[in-house]
Length: 344
Image (cartoon, rainbow, N blue to C red; front, side, top):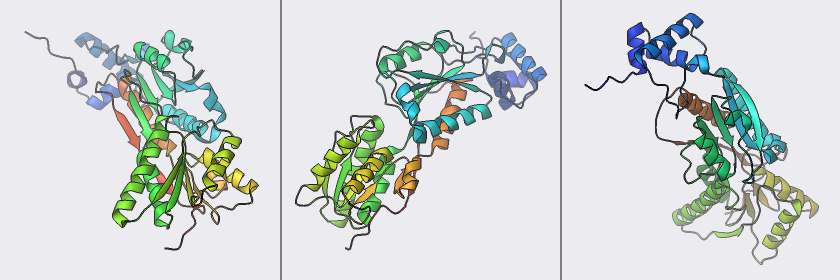
């Protein structure tokens, strides 16, 4: 006869407690007395409950209550986006009863596996941004639960992924510009730079196509495709010059993020051009500089990204098994003063 599978519910039934209490005890979370926690762990072991190694599930007695957060070293200088996201993640981890170890890595493929992961001195891993594919696959092979946050989808990496809804966000902000009467638009940002940029470019194109079709009107668009997240002011200056030299230059420039938009505003000022009177400019991310510039942008809700990522990771640590999933966190259109209303 096939042995009955030992589940959290079975453990709960034996002890006459709730399944939720059993789950919290095996996770080592607050709200469970130490006496009850040890009682639940003992009963789980007696019944032969399997703490899946592949999912990272293990009794509280062997847990470290530590999460390693892996982030490209170059991101640490960006306090407005990545710094803010790290603060939110640390806050959510503390709320769940975990401490965070920050592990900066190189974006090249020659990075060794961080020692805290190699020696399994953590319960789980959060991977932020564009981590080298070789390192992502090596981390997956460590068998520690891992969740990607705002990174690039990777073939062969069967990991959960939490992202801002870049496609819908960019579609919303582009539509807002079109509804303000603009019919000559440009997009600045390299789709090859990151998955987020590619999705924003896709959202821009979709908004233009849908608006053009629904209004039966022509929309002229241009694309400067070589501006990356690590751009220079000089590159943005050259991009603007290229856009303005034609006979019908754009009246609005949609930027892939706030950093590009801030650089563009700097270049405009150096040329004695005004935003929005001479040129409409929008961003994406709602970085601190965007409010200072009164820039219309999309607020990437970092608290939502952090909450979803930590919640997913906690479930994986608990040994809860489900297919790897991708969660999209909706952003919010922040209407400020950088869109000029054109006459119809």
